[in-house]
Image (cartoon, rainbow, N blue to C red):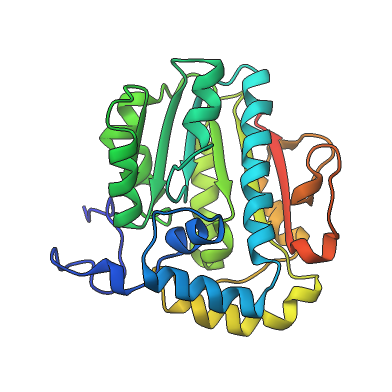
Length: 272
């Protein structure tokens, strides 16, 4: 059986590869958030992205705020373990801090395709017995579900919060839909799925080609918005919580900012 527990972009096979010379989606996101876990190549890519999408920084912050609210919502619903796929770098205010500030033994597994992001995460989480980061490609969900780090921390018989925040628009349809279907199918009843996703119905659409080209030079193969109907497919049979699939800054009860500047929608659904 092929081992898909690692990532699969150019240069990955060389253990001595200099990842600092090639931007990654995780580190660009960190740069947009004003983080320090990024390289000059990532910061330059973030600048180019902002030139095409001036609201990109605002969207990144709105996504992070949605992540906070979604985790709090799931904690209120009794969820005590989280699987954050495409997590990026777990810097200040990420899932383990939010969850463990309320439930000290809450379990969190971060999954990312970027080896540098995972290495940084390992340092951040080094003394945290209830959180870990694993390097894996979400296109191969069995490798995630069977990963020793995932199996060690997450109980498959208890509700899990699956977090797919600002990452599915980096995955082509042929990979994204079957992968998410398998991940959701693995969740026990009472679990939740949180998704935020670039939507293709805003003024930002004019920059789509340039954004896609920028991200093709990173660790992902695409960056494409989907329609709301296409995004809804990811939830499968899970039931959307009110208010449904809305602008990312509006979940769950409204927010500030012009919706057209967001270009991102979000929702949380419960698996019956």
